[in-house]
Image 1 (cartoon, helix red, strand yellow):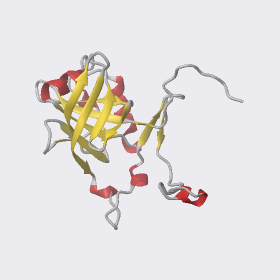
Image 2 (spheres, helix red, strand yellow):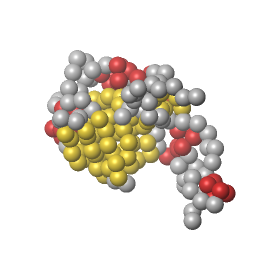
Image 3 (tube, helix red, strand yellow):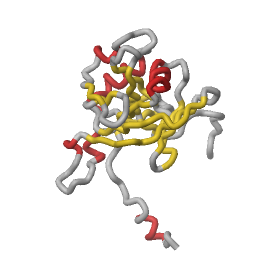
Image 4 (tube, one colour):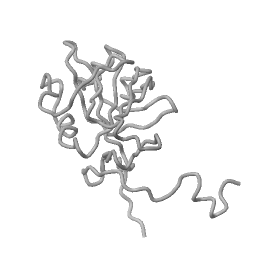
Length: 189
């Protein structure tokens, strides 16, 4: 038997994305966002309120970064979500984050996070708060590349946000092979 829950934002998993921008004075800023997804192979879709300092920053500079949060930096990642850039200037000073300037866009990279998307603003609609960023580059810390030159996702210990229980979870172990395991049932006809 199923139980109706009504309208809930329970689409799981939700990546924990740390959005990086520069403030007017050139200092780095970051916020934690969960409503992030791929829009096309070269675009990322987000929903961010225009009241966020991060949104004001990225609309001025037409650029931002998205670093995927990991277990090692859980407290830092949660802090930048709890603390408003509108109220606390230089809020990254309270974190262990190390900042690098992107070579590709006018936005900071949080070097401690395993993988970072460097984006230009493609569009932002204030009425829907829908932001689309165009991926200009993706960079990764080399310690997450295995001996075969492949990205080791499990080693990154990426966080997901569980909107049902208001918790963070780590992306788990590999349990199957996409575009392959269904062939056992006659898939790919």
